[in-house]
Image 1 (cartoon, rainbow, N blue to C red):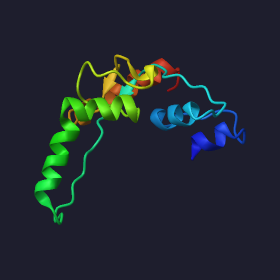
Image 2 (image 1 turned 180 degrees about the horizontal axis):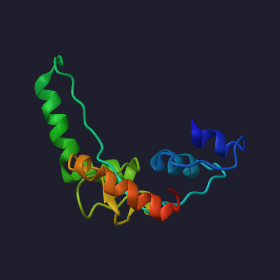
Image 3 (image 1 turned 135 degrees about the horizontal axis):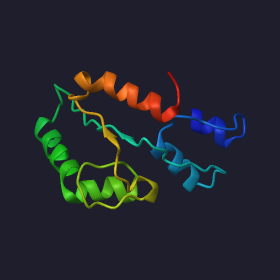
Length: 125
């Protein structure tokens, strides 16, 4: 929603918006610019499967395809999605970056240190 109200001119700026959504809207011609600012934070994407899928074997085959090189290439190059596999080129070059932080389950114990780092970077207390 934030991307849409910024690209329509209702608001002049959006902060912490979804990059993939913004890039896709820009690619369709919206007057929208954006930049991935430091610190660059990357979070994993999820793949959710129905527990009681009517065709569980097809579900497993789909999951295997999504995680394959072919599936990862399709998601990145055609849909502009972030992917897990290294070496796959994204449709949107802004996302070919080295992250400063990767959100993982190990984040919990380090959260306070990261908050302090961000406060220093942003100049807030």
